[in-house]
Image (cartoon, rainbow, N blue to C red; front, side, top):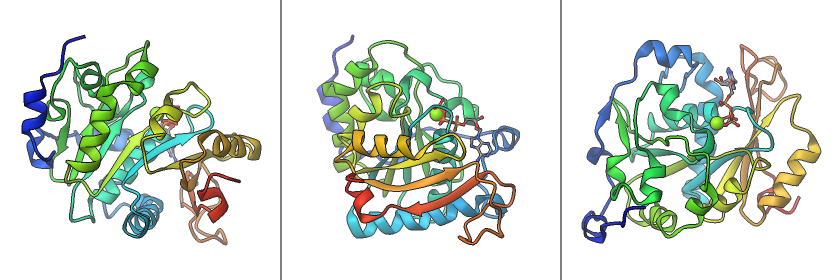
Length: 270
Ligand SMILES: Nc1ncnc2c1ncn2[C@@H]1O[C@H](COP(=O)(O)OP(=O)(O)OP(=O)(O)O)[C@@H](O)[C@H]1O
Ligand SMILES: [Mg+2]
């Protein structure tokens, strides 16, 4: 592992969107990966817009800025939610929004938007890259900064428990202009990674896969991640549609409903 260069790290006071190189995703890639949050006219972005409003409110009222996305089991739709929510948020906030891929074993965000890269956030955590601006990109025409990861199979828990991780959190928390920083995490039950990461974040969104995630799963995740607050949960692949009495149904029957966490759940005690 290469040693970090403290001069470079310290010299950059604030991490700014404008410091990141621009990346232009192909339109076909955005649509083939069903990414709807980039387009304000796309009706399928509606659930993400609702969630965005609620999250922005929580950020303002309770100071939740560093927010993870996790689920009980794999393939629940965390990365899909993270990208759509981040792009939806970035359309309305005055300050930029940053999205970080912390699912280092199964990193997917670069691929989702068609970004080919050899080094991502894992290289920063390993000390191969000294400055976060070397691994982030600014999505053209948006206020969104993306910090992708390149998959690493081993030692991810060590990376997440290391000094470089603490340094990364310190930069995002104190020396970055983003209003909200979203972290795409692995499933909570897959390994320790989500739990270790969440010890440093302000809270998390729990993606519930309709039909696959059970009540017991949800209870176990809340208990496992306690005391980090669950800011809300999102029911994905829900088939209720617009006619659903909650009013958050999603026309094509996929994403889902958003529930505010109850106070008990938000404390992680339920
Ligand atoms: N609501 C949805 N509508 C359409 N496609 C969806 C939806 N949710 C998830 N998908 C698709 O399902 C697949 C799995 O979703 P995704 O990769 O977001 O899950 P994940 O929870 O991040 O998985 P992993 O645990 O592997 O990280 C992807 O191809 C994604 O595009
Ligand atoms: Mg994922």
